[in-house]
Amino acid sequence: MFVRIKRINGIDYAYLVENEWTPKGSRQNVTAYLGKVLKVQRQKITIQRLTGSNYNKLINDLIETTLLDYGFQKQNQHPQTYILNDITVDLLQMRTVPKHKPAVLALEQGHFCEQTIAELIRFSKKENPEKTAVALASALLQAGISISTENMVALFESIA
Image (cartoon, rainbow, N blue to C red):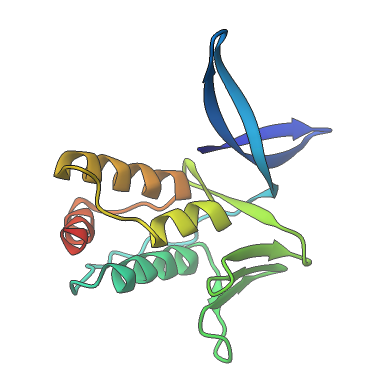
């Protein structure tokens, strides 16, 4: 599955799409509407070394750092909630919403949304280490999360 962007009346909207092979060739099926695409600008780049061996903690630290780099502010009363202007990212409920409507954040070359973040959080080891590394890198790229080589190694090792 992947995120497809469609421009309608000058506004970008995101859809979750999967490929299906038929006798006539590949066909794409829209499986879910993800919301309006919101473009946010990175305000800083934090150089952080991920430490520890718990995958969930490492991925949460990476997501938090990414959101903070884009100018989101962490809410004290709701520690898994981040706000930038009228955009709220709730990591407990896995939602990105402006004004109570679903949305997708365009970050780097990827799309930060409920599906891409859930895929990262639920990521599991594949048949072999090479496939695991490729799938993890792909999941990070799809979510728009940049990662240093050193942090990628730490994240990969926490899975194995």
